[in-house]
Image 1 (spheres, helix red, strand yellow):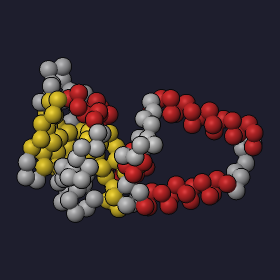
Image 2: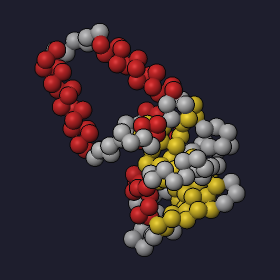
Image 3: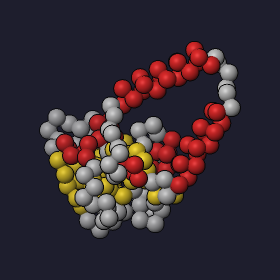
Length: 165
């Protein structure tokens, strides 16, 4: 099974996606939390500003030393990454490939089938890349979920490529 997913077709830049590195991406979504009622979607820029503000305030209040709590915070994040299920939204990757002005759809090409959606739906598609802290090696490299949770129990599996038309 190939772990790389190419985005090709009617795009300015053909790019490849490597789901094995997304665990380090700040855009990753904790799917256990996302599909619960407690999830609140945030704007990426607002979230960045909030994190930087907290960091700045912490530096002012505590100084540039590394207090003992940082180790426990890092440990909590590591434990979470080793036990949670994560995904990432497809839209930024399609955007980075720069679809042509006349492109209207994208097709998810799997081992057995093809699924075609309007480009506008890329924001509603989540690529699940880990389950309980483990990469999806058996039927992956990603599972395709919809933000509304409609296919949470039966995701699209064995994604091999994305074709923009």
